[in-house]
Image (tube, rainbow, N blue to C red; front, side):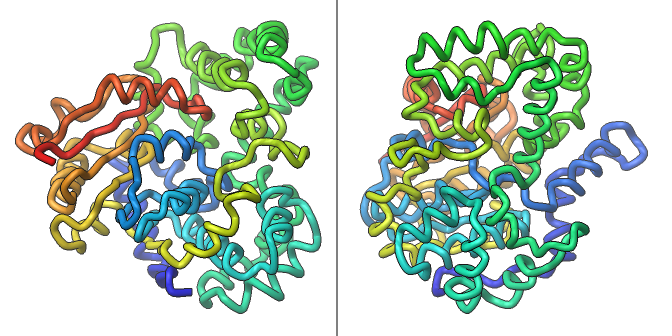
Length: 416
C-alpha cells in the first residue's frame, strides 16, 4: 500500500520512547515509575482511540486538500478524518505496536472483500472467521515487519492476530484496565454492563448514582487510584498522573468518579460508543448502535476510496515535523501527548509546529487538567504567533463524548 512506511528498528523505537517518558534519575522513585511505564507502554495500549473524532473534525474544519499530522494511537480518528476529504493524513506514533495496529487497519480497509467483513473484523472483533480473513485478504498486503508482529506468539502460545477472534477490545493495556475495573465492581456486587440497559438519560443517571458512584468511596478503590501505577492501564504516565491530580483537591478517586459520571450520564447511549466500550467492553451488538465514523456502513465507501491518503510513521512528533518543509501542514492533532513533556520538549515541538504551519493552520490537543498548559512553558515569541480560541475550546470540550479529559484546546495561526 502506498500509504504505509517501513517500521523503524525496534532498538531505535525503544530509545525514542524512553526519551519521551523518562525524565528523572533511574534510582529515584519517580525514575523507577517512569521506567515501569515505558516498559508497559511498548505493547498495544489502545485498540480504540479515546478522543472524539467528531469533535476533532469540528475543531480542525478540514477542507478538501488539507494536510493533517496526527498521533496515531488506535487509528480510529486518522481514518475518520478521511470523510472530510483531506489530501493526506500522516499518523505518527512512538509505539511500534500502534504502528503495526494501524498498518493492519489500513490493509483491512483496502482489501477485505466488503463492509460486512470489515465490520466483523473491527466492530464485532470476536469471530474466528477474522483469522482466515487476515490470512486471505490482509496478510499479502502487509510488510514483513507487520506480519512478524501479528504472527508472533505470545506467552500464551497464541499468535497476536488471534485477539481479533477473542474480543479485540478486551485486549491491549486499556482493555485489561477496563476489565480490572469490571472485576472490582463485581466484587461489590455491581455489574457495569447493567448501565447499558438504560433507555433514557434519567435511567443512566439513576444507575450511576445508585451503583457506580458508591464504588469510589470503597477503601480498595481509593487506595488503588492513589498509586500512579494503578492508572498505567489508562495510558497515563507518571507525569500525566501528576497533572490529573492537580485537577481537584478531593483525591484521584473523586476526579475519576467525576470523569466516569460524565461518560455514563452526559450523552445518550444511542450516541456514545465510548460508553459502550467502558461499560460493555465492546461496541453495541445492535446494528443501529453507535460506532466511530470510519467504522459505520455509510462512511465505508469513502474511507475505502481514500485510505491510500493515510500514512503511518514510527517517530516522535517533533522529529517528524523537523523533516517537513515550511508551511506544509494545515492541521496538527497532538492528543494528550503534551502532558508528558518537559518545557524543553514543548518548546522544540512548538517551534516545529510554527515553522511547518500553513496559513490558517489549526492545532488541537487535550489535557488531563482543564487548563491550557502552554502559557509560561512555551517561548512567548512562538506562542504569540497563535490565537487561543478559549470559548470555542470549552464548547468543543463539552461535546467530547469520551469524557475522560479535563480540557480540549484549539489554537489557530494568526495573520490568516
